[in-house]
Amino acid sequence: MEFFSKPGRRGWRIVLLILCGMTLAVVVIAGSVTVLHKTSDTAFCVSCHSMERPLAEYQGSIHFQNHAGIRAECSDCHIPSQPVAYLVTKLGAVKDVYGELTGKIATEEQYNSHKLAMAESVWKTMKASDSATCRSCHSFKAMDILAQQPEARKAHPVAIKQGETCIDCHRGVAHILPDMRQSNSSGAAALAAIAATTRPDASPLYSIATQPFMLQPEEGPSAGTLFPAAELNILQRKKGYLQAELAGWQQEGVPGVIYAAAGKRIISAVIGEGAVSHIKTTRSEQDSETGMVWHQVSLNLWLQPASLVEDRQKIWQYAAGLMTANCTGCHGLTSLDHYTANQWIGVMKGMASRTSLNPEQLRLLTLYVQQHASDMSPAGTHHEK
Image 1 (tube, rainbow, N blue to C red):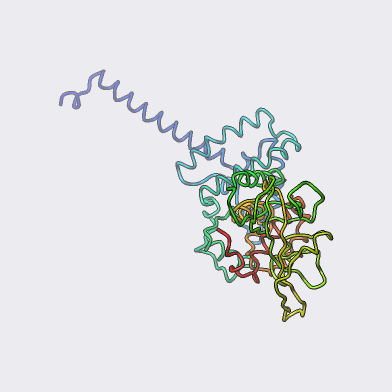
Image 2 (tube, rainbow, N blue to C red):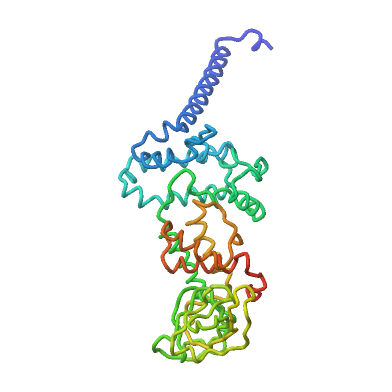
């Protein structure tokens, strides 16, 4: 007890050291918090030369200026509020400092070349966190969905039901979308890799791309063109080729096209003149609304097996990715049953020039939305796995 009642010189030193340590800890902690706070400020974020372009994009967005006068700062979208995630994000920002010092995106050309990779990194992080930073301001539970714009009224219930997160649909709300061509192509490569593992005895199979077909199992002139996602019932294999039956519908007077459904302009194949006579008609029916006569038909054809998969859902997953990457940034999540199969054709053509889709990707995406349109019955996909 004597030590505590009458501290000697050694005891006072210990007390002084403790006080100094506590003071230093407070200074370090306060300083760290201040630095972390200041480096999260928008003024600091855009102080670098390389941030001029993303700043201009942000200033042109609704998050910068809107009728409500509410502004989302950089940190609101890019820095989570949860302590651990906050610190991890701040530590990860060191790479941005390094990029600035090395001039990685110093010019507009460099910025554009890296923009897709930077955007995909942010999208991946937001997806993993269930768009936590978005939900700090926007919550499904707090939304008055009936008071929203027509497209949002349709999209948000779909998003809630399907477990979608904010970044799935709202990728272009603060920054202009990057050129998506590289991302689009990577999906096609992944689909081709799946096709390479297709079982030899699998049937039915589905085309992953536009490809020619023949009437005989040998190299020769094309008898027509098979479209993506067309269903093929395999009949036999010979000389490295597959013989398959393509079933579908033809409109009276239009022998050069086989459609996936009667009355729907969902193209399965374009038929060459020499192959028209090989088409077999099973039955005919008249469309009660248009008066047009449609024939249920089939055609036996030969093609190489390299671009076929046994699970059409793999094709639709790729197509859904194309839609997310190229469409939802402007339109949000548009329900696939918002239009009929034939209406989707005009919608896709009208939007094509505003996307990074090439003709093949646009064709596949059009077939995807058509096959899932409001007037397409789920029974039409009963073969899918």
